[in-house]
Length: 379
Ligand SMILES: Cc1cc2nc3c(=O)[nH]c(=O)nc-3n(C[C@H](O)[C@H](O)[C@H](O)COP(=O)(O)OP(=O)(O)OC[C@H]3O[C@@H](n4cnc5c(N)ncnc54)[C@H](O)[C@@H]3O)c2cc1C
Image (cartoon, rainbow, N blue to C red; front, side, top):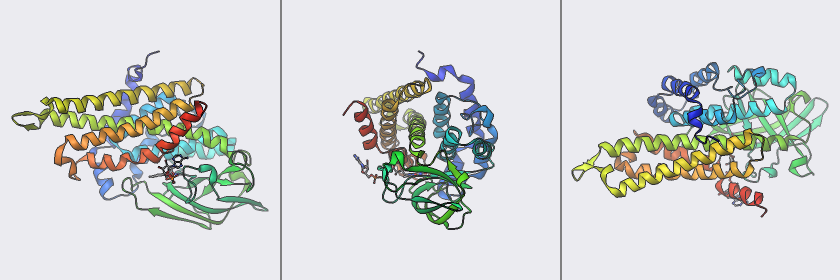
C-alpha cells in the first residue's frame, strides 16, 4: 500500500490549498485572534466550495469523500487557519452523526442545511462534572406530553452562540449505564429556557466555546436523533472521527511551524553564518521533521484502516496522542528557534503555541488516549 497519501491526491490537495490562499490569508488569522468575531464569510466560503460537506454522502449534498480526504482537508486548513478547522470540526461532526443516525427528514433538513451553509450546528457533550468521564453526564431529557423537557448545563460547547441548533447528549434514563441511557437531541438555540454564554479562551475566541444552560427546554419527539437511550454508540462513532480530525489538524499546524522555522534559520545570521548551519540547530530541526513524518504515517494509516471498515480504535488513539503531543513539541522547538521574535505577538508561532493546547483536550486528553490504547491491548 502506498503510505504517501499526498502523492495519491495532488489535484485534490491543490484545490484545498487554493481555497486557503484566497480565504485564509495570514493577516486574517492575526485579526481574528486580536478582534475575535465569528468568521461568517469563511464559513460560507467553506460551504459553497464543498469543503464543509466533502465527506458527507452525495445524496445529502456532499461528495462521498473518504476519511483520508477528510484528514487532508483538516491538515491543509490547519496549516493556514484554526478558525477554518473549528468550523469544519463542529459542523462536520454534527452532520456526520446526523447522516449516520438521523431519520430521512432530519438528514434532509439538517445535514443538507449544514452542507449548504444555511444551518450552523454546535455539539454539547461535556458538562461541568463530566469531561473525560463523558459517561458521567447528568443533563437529562424527560418525556412528557409535548415531547421531552431538557435540563442541565453543558460546557465548552463550541460555536453555540452562533449556531441554529445544538446537538445535545443527555440522559433519558437516570438509572442505566451510559451505553443504554444516553440520547441525542437536536435542540434549536432559539428555544425558550436555553441560555448561552461564551467563555474567554486563550485562543480561538472567534469560534467561541460556551456554557449552555437548559432550563425546561421543550423539544418534540422528532428532535431525537435515533432511538431513545441509543445515543452512546453514535457518540462513540463520532469520537473516532473527532480524534482523526484532531490528529490531522496537528500535522498541519506542525508543518506550518516547521516551514516557518526552516525559512528563519536559513536567513537569520549569527556569528557570521545562518543559524541553520549550526549542528545543534540542525538536530532540532531534524527531530521536528522526523516527528512530523511519524505523525503523518500514524494518522493516515489509521484513516485508511477505518476507511477499509476495520476496527481502528487503538490506531486512532495512537495517532491522536502522538500528533497532539508532537505538534506541541514541534511548536515549542519553533518558539526556541525563532529566538526572541517568537515572543512577539506579531508572529504566528506564539498563537500556534496557544492553539496547540486545544488538541490536548479535544477528542479526549492524552491520558484518555493512552487508557484506550491500553484497554485495546487487553489491559
Ligand atoms: C477549546 C475547547 C473546545 C471544546 N469544545 C467542545 C465541544 O464543542 N463540545 C464538547 O462537548 N466538549 C468540548 N470541549 C471539551 C473537551 O472535550 C474536554 O475538555 C475533554 O473531554 C476533557 O475534559 P476536561 O477538560 O473536563 O478534563 P478532565 O476530565 O477534568 O481531566 C483533567 C485531567 O485529568 C486527567 N484524567 C481524567 N480522567 C483520567 C483517567 N481516567 N486516567 C488518567 N487521567 C485522567 C485528564 O487527562 C486531564 O489531564 C472543548 C474543550 C476545549 C478546551
